[in-house]
Image (cartoon, rainbow, N blue to C red):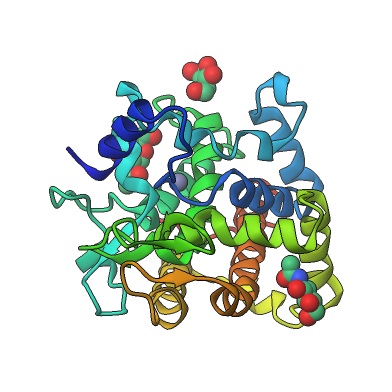
Length: 300
Ligand SMILES: *[C@@H]1O[C@H](CO)[C@@H](O)[C@H](O)[C@H]1NC(C)=O
Ligand SMILES: *[C@@H]1O[C@H](CO)[C@@H](O)[C@H](O)[C@H]1NC(C)=O
Ligand SMILES: *[C@@H]1O[C@H](CO)[C@@H](O)[C@H](O)[C@H]1NC(C)=O
Ligand SMILES: [Zn+2]
């Protein structure tokens, strides 16, 4: 049983108890990443996105950004399961595409970095009207949007043996959790509770304020800078494993209780990752669907 079917069995078995999901940014993380991105689209990219979305979401990309997590256990989408993360060698604190981007059977490109290239490349044919009929452009958009969130979650580029922190059980303040889930969701929920009246819109406004006219505004142009997609995606993954080592795993042993010190020092880092994921998703969508004819070198 792989870790995700194990997770599913747990969910089914303990349906009444909240079980940490092993599936990437929580709903909140993915939603905010996509809301940030959608607000930064140029008009042509925004229109393309609206056209690709099903009517029932009224043009709101973020409403479907968790869709890949919902379908990954369905038989038809089982192949997407390894695309949410990257397992890197224990303690190596590095990412090497040819070494690390594969599934557990060694199938190449089956990791979140390969998936982002794949779905960007599929979408890049949409504007020219040369889409390959085998590919569903709506799904390509949703997968790309979701995986750009996942690759920015530091523990999604984690160590192999502990499954990106999933097997490191610990306490988050008073309740049981695990290290992966702390970065997926616990930090966001604690921030919402302590600082934002449990209102994700207030948190989102604060994040937006910080990159438009605040602590990160001078950094945004370097976040978006990208000449060659493959190397940019590798950079995102390298950033994540570096943060995972420097802040995620640091001083964490199974059974510890993480509380204020960990929360206070990690929250700003995690919020910045959400902002970066959103800004960079917009950069990719603008380049492949938008007015810019800058394009983006993608493998075909
Ligand atoms: C790319 O997407 C196609 C389907 O759209 C899929 O068959 C293939 O496995 C994907 N590869 C990666 C690396 O995501
Ligand atoms: C594309 O995928 C979406 C989501 O799975 C689905 O609702 C839609 O019918 C698909 N479109 C085509 C043309 O297959
Ligand atoms: C935004 O920046 C302010 C000032 O540095 C900081 O206190 C706040 O926590 C930041 N908010 C987020 C969501 O990063
Ligand atoms: Zn995911």
